[in-house]
Image (tube, rainbow, N blue to C red; front, top):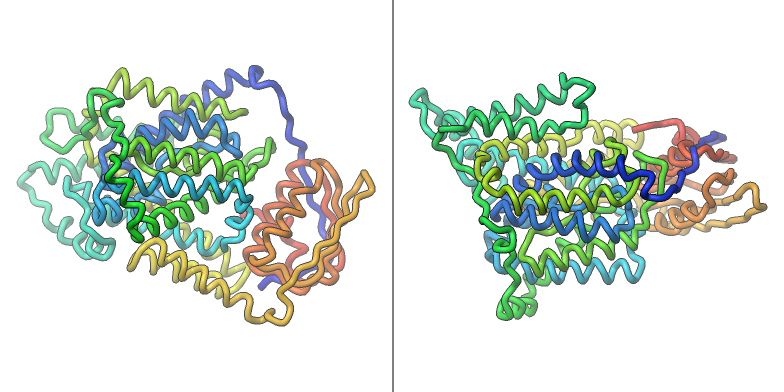
Length: 515
């Protein structure tokens, strides 16, 4: 637990809202950058999920054109996510690809209803240790699964089997050059090209994504070689496969319903985590979490009707969008238009891409999900328990399944409540005199009370100076402390001052830290 402190000040520049037409050039440029980032990831995630590449492209199109138009986070980009690849792979393996449509329709409805009943704030209460542990576990599973794709082989049914078989794949290489050796060389060249480009790219081309460069290099090297390549239909319309009436009867199957709840929960958590990260990158409109949930629900409902992959808000494409100077939601919408236009007009280009190159892109993506830096930050600032939660979530995701890992992490988070069982309540008092906003906190700030605290802070008008009286705040767990840290940094970025008085311990320094 982190406790509270003396006095600190934080602040920020107010966001500026201007007519979208003034930003048309910026949004147009940013949309092309996001399109170039999204294309290889949409296809690679689909293949990692055990479905044809076009399923990921359809999700990217819906995520851009439909969800981009109605999202609660205007600069966030939605599409197929690496975080769901593992659970989708297991569902397709166990239930068949025909079950995916009904599952996504149900998951979309659950998300939409959650947004209608304003449950978005509760997803912010999920411990960062759990979320990052989940992403790290997913990263490990993607790496060990896509490692086999580098050799033109299909991943094995479980993460542990993939891990156990990895040395055999590597030692099975021979000097007798055949498809396996060629595919592995293409995969390694793709990874090296990605990393080299990201390290040495000229400033004038800084927005050209490394994943695209890697895939182009891998494709050029594969010309004339007998290696497995991406298969896509001649028409994207032919890839749309609505669930049959008999498939919809599967809603009565408890395992289908459980899978829908799992996807809804994980997709919502990943989406809102990404939205929170995007909010840190710009000083424009903040995310409306409930509106975002409703938009994601509509998107997943449409993906289910189209027989495509599930979607979430995705941080890699979203950060590329912000870094490319996108200003409005038009950028995300246009990136979906470009995907649609490309697959409709030039499907033959996609069939030249070797599977090993896409596997290589996913290997790099998976490695980057394993953020040891976040674990060291947790240990340095909050002690051993959050690191234990992170590690336990990671290991359980790898050895069992995604949902079990998340539930184990959430269960361990409950241990943070033990020292404060005698006083778990948090009272929040507000007063405003027009020029400043006063907030008094009384009790213990934990993930249980985080939605109340977060809603109070979010109600503070932009540009208003804030005084927080923390003299009666006993302690803060790491989930609430991370939320406070982010809020302080946003206020600093907006030019307003936050003054904390009467605190004890580490909270006074939160506004001064950046992670």
